Image (cartoon, rainbow, N blue to C red; front, side):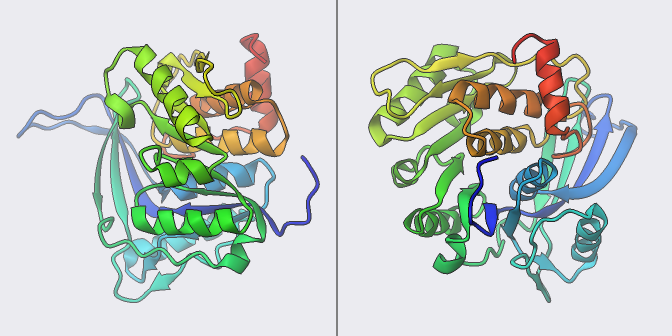
Length: 309
């Protein structure tokens, strides 16, 4: 890791919620019934998933997340953070009386796909990012659930000199122009389109706005258009083979964490994207948005076994 004088390696800004994960053999038909084979309640939300992964990889993380209520879900969520025993700075994750804690039910089927139902996400409260606090971290990243709050926080972070990694904001040119990396899923571009569509989209964002643009495509890998290489086609990075998928929840969040980790190591973009892909793939082997996060050493060994490191 590159030495620095920052208090934090990364400020992770955005969604914190309580996740209820159900694993079922198949989704029930309307009016039908299916048994739940596994159940788990755990910390969830894009920001929390990314923060936990980065913390487990030894980075100094500050989580600036959506507030929790003082309801049963909020109290459980706080206990789960305490039980996690992580070194994440939670001083800017508030507990507010009377607020409904964001809650998401994630139903995972054997193909790894998940169906999600949520409550409390339309009235989320995310604290404003303070300029002086933004200067304490080398990297800043945000998700789009509290969209306008994320836009404002991105502007503050960029002005403070942080390197921005934005997730699912590629439709916002002001974010792309402020970001070092702007990453999104193919589902946010055009689900089911031919793969060249996503390569062209990544290159278009890079050429127009100047950031490194990445489009993830699940088992088809991802397309990476590196900043500074305007006019060149996007590079395709293949996905790793994962034979025992349990739950794909949080894969994009862990992929984002891998991008940030590799950038902090000063790895080249191809190496960084492959590490991010491996980390995200391995996370699919367990339930929940961060349940399958592996150590850096385990991820690299997995890559070596597939002869891609």
